[in-house]
Length: 403
View 1 (cartoon, rainbow, N blue to C red):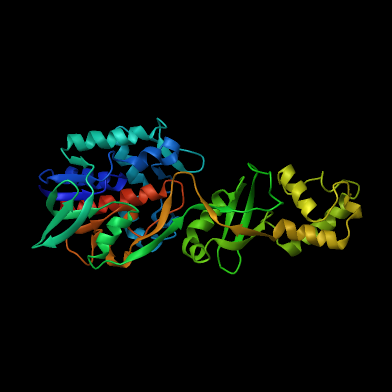
View 2 (tube, rainbow, N blue to C red):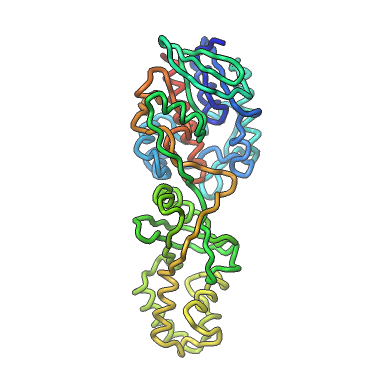
């Protein structure tokens, strides 16, 4: 089976690559090979089935800040195809996106099927072949032609694009082509913590700053207490930027939580001393401060060895110091991780130094291209991983279509 272009991987990056090649060069015969029975499986479940297509961050430099791996490399590509271009691309195909309060963007139907149907209609219109249940066993290059051996048949092509995401088997095959594969580790996970201070408080959230002890890792933002420990944007950011460091620690480490980020321990102690005078007759546990949730405040007071009936006037200096410390520098032991929902993200993949980001072509092999999460690029949640897929796929498509 001969093709001009074969794309291995029937996900977001694969479809976007194929469609944009066909749009720009209608002469090329294009096929998408997908090992599963269905294409676009991750698109279907993303965003809780709503598909978080991109994020309303329209400045390329600002957008790169959401990528723990890929920040430097994606700056140039984002200048060529950014979030605004994604919105326009879908709008041209009658798919309108809406912006939510946190910047995430979804189809206005709130259904991932809208995105899937758009892609399927486009590949049908452009006569792109989709071959499912085709597992690639190997590929090699002979006289400027790529030969692919698969579970169903053998294929040849001039241009080969790999868009398989976090696929260890494909990474092994890429490794045989003189490419370095950065070993994969989980990113975007929550922290397992068993601690009496947060037991039974699941569902409670507060803005906090968190540091991982003995590292430079820190993050701020909403922290959510769960039945297994801690989650929320601040924890997920830590897990993303600290993916390799925390893997090296085998997910056993300590975090320091400041529940009142506008204070450090010293300034908190000063503030509490003023409150002790001003609110002398009030009960400490019932007089919550700093907009903390009631139950969290009560638990912090209890952890500071302060009886639930004690009034502010009766606090001794030792209790005041302990309370200041529990509010601004509480240490928690993390024992393991939990995957964040179904949107498992991996840090690792094809080494970025071996890719030309002006073309998305391999520096090791002519006419070999990569797009999406097969590369050592990953982001926090919010539509950023999809934007990486759209951008790198668009650039790879431009290169292939105009060669």
